[in-house]
Length: 296
Ligand code: GDP
Ligand code: MG
Image 1 (cartoon, rainbow, N blue to C red):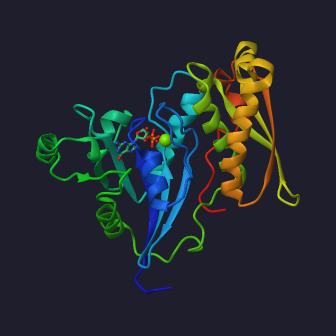
Image 2: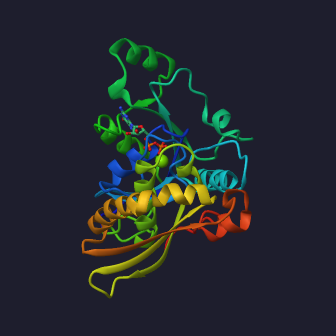
């Protein structure tokens, strides 16, 4: 290991749809966080790990900072606040195509600004016209301009982040890209696929739990259950003669095979758990209630 390396936690905070998951995936060079044009697609904190020769950056993808209206959103907000509290550096990611962004403390309804330094990062700069770019640079002189999609500005961002991290030996094995389990990513890929294939209110009522994950078999056997809140939603997810759930299963299986690197048999089910989003116990059981500790 080189001497004088820096390591630390970097929280990526920002409103839903700012591009947090896209940035995280670009940084770790692999698809970890699910990406969707529908807001609120990120419910759990995802830790991505980026190891350079001089630094190890552990990324925390904070779910959207929302007004908590029910138990699930409260859990999401707690995740985001914990990530910000634990961080050595906070990236406040702002969609540069949105008018008049607020400060992080305002946007997140924080009582105090975070203790860690906050870098304002204007994302989606690829969709911004030149004139607007100039205006943005004037209103946010300290902001970094990036495109999580094209990668523009991302190297400079990493240099800036590295300079703000404490000197510390690497916190994780440099080969690791994430401290979370394959199981979690598999459940997120099922949920992402369902989000892609279903519209309107169903996706927000949908949670996915991996009940069995047998890597000792070939194909790898995975039993996944999608939970919805009502019978009517279950009928939509199943579709006419099971067509919808089969289509979700086929696409999700292919994605999971890419992740696992082996053939997978995905045994996909849908169950009703009435109003689970309003039930704190259910939110916890579905894995959204607790914040895992750093490290594994
Ligand atoms: P999150 O809710 O903050 O995690 O946002 P996502 O990463 O899921 O992205 C929300 C939407 O913005 C998706 O449709 C992305 O493809 C899009 N997006 C993210 N970054 C960029 C970017 O740099 N440029 C453009 N044009 N679109 C982006
Ligand atoms: Mg996200």
